[in-house]
Each structure stands twice: as C-alpha cells, then as structure tokens.
Image (tube, rainbow, N blue to C red; front, side, top):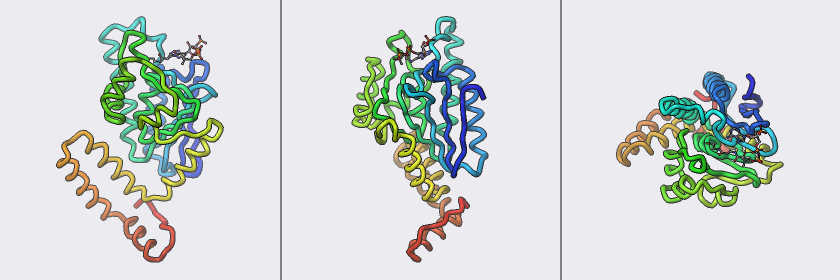
Length: 258
Ligand code: COA
C-alpha cells in the first residue's frame, strides 16, 4: 500500500497513515487503503486490538485533502462525504477495540477519524479542531454527529462553529480524549493500554462495543433490552466459564475468544 502501513505484533495491529509530506491528509487512495486494511483486520484472528496513528513528528491527520475541494460539484461533495463516512463507520463497527494514538494535528477529517475510533489517547503536542468553517465548508466525515455524541452539543458546537484549535490538555478536559502522554512515550503507553485490553474477554468486549453503540442510537429502554440480549449472548461463550473459574482459582484467566 502507498499511504497506509500495517504491522501486526503480539495481537496488536498498528495502522499508520503514512503521507507525512502532506501531514497525512486523507485523499481517495488513503481512504481506499484504510478500508482495505480494516477489512483485512476483521478476518485476522491474530489481531485483538488496533492502534491507528500518523507517520512523522507533526501530524496524526491534518484533515481531508483540501486540494480536492475547489473542483467538487455539490453532487460530488455529497459522494465525497458519503465515502469518508462509510470508511469511518467501518472502523467504528470493528468488534475489536480500536484506539487512536494522536501524535500531532488531528484536524477536520483527522479529528473525525479519531472520533470513529473507540478510544483516543493524545501526545502532549497534539492539536484538535474542526476548522472546516474557516474554509467555508462543514465537517463531512461524521464530525457534526460523533462530536456532540462524545463531548456534548455545547462543546461540539464551540469547535464546529469557531473552527478553533485546541491543545491536548483542553481536549482531555472536554472528554475528547481518554488520556494524554508525553510525545515520545505515546505509542509505548498506548501499547501498554492495549495489553490491558488484551487481558480481558474478547467476546465480552465485542458485545460491549455493540451494546454501547447500538444503545446510543436508541431509547434507554431499547438500549437496556440490547444489553440484556448481549448479556445472554456472552453466557453462550466458553470464556465466561474460564473467567469465573479463574477468579475462584485465584489465577489470571486464559481467554480463548470462544
Ligand atoms: N489537505 C491537503 N494538504 C494539506 C492539508 C490538508 N488538509 N494539511 C496540510 N497539507 C499540506 C500543506 O499544503 C503542505 O504541503 P506543501 O508542502 O506541498 O505545500 C504540507 O501539508 C505541510 O503543511 P503546512 O501548512 O506547510 O504545515 P504547517 O506546520 O505550516 O501548518 C497546519 C500545519 C495543520 C496548521 C496547516 O497545514 C493546516 O491548516 N492544514 C489544513 C487543516 C484543515 O483545515 N483541515 C481540515 C480540512 S477540511
């Protein structure tokens, strides 16, 4: 692949957007390659957790590729948004936890990519923003929907309407990221966190992700019913026997993802 690198090691797939000369901006090829990558990971039993990060010192992803904008017709713009949304929804629908390791600029589509991941950790130098309004356009890869769902409407509208950039500490305070680490330690800390995730029941995590995301789309009573069904489904697994047995035997569980 030209712009996306994947390394699978010890259960972790690290997906690196690799277009540093354009601050890893998303063009059609990057989106195609991201899609191919996540489709591949879906069927790869070796992978338990996915980390998404950006190549280079400066940027996670500095947005959709602006050079494509001037020539877009309104109809093409609709397709453009749909395409990015589809790829990001594929990432979000992963049954394996996906963590964004935000190593610099996460602007526009870059912030939206981070929002499509299940968890977000940032380097101290990371900068966040939805600067589309500065270009006279709006967020089109899910920002107007996922940002208010994550941090609340007021905070989301602050970012979406002002286009202002915020630093990692403000992003943490807003609940936009789960944690902030020194730049040089970001990947090792995120890998440590991935190890913590990998020690837990994989089927339970998959069902949790499903219940949380389906629940957000539904009423509380529908969400509670989803949760009860997921609770039923987890009791069909071998891992739940192992989890309880290991607790009683005072040893760490050995989950088999079955
Ligand atoms: N689309 C296309 N190219 C982009 C890009 C984007 N979203 N963001 C950065 N680049 C390119 C620049 O054009 C430049 O390319 P060049 O060297 O061929 O001219 C290269 O990446 C480096 O960017 P540069 O602007 O020189 O770096 P900087 O450190 O001075 O500024 C930013 C960094 C992130 C503040 C600035 O690049 C920026 O504002 N980018 C656009 C962010 C944005 O609006 N994203 C939302 C798009 S909807």
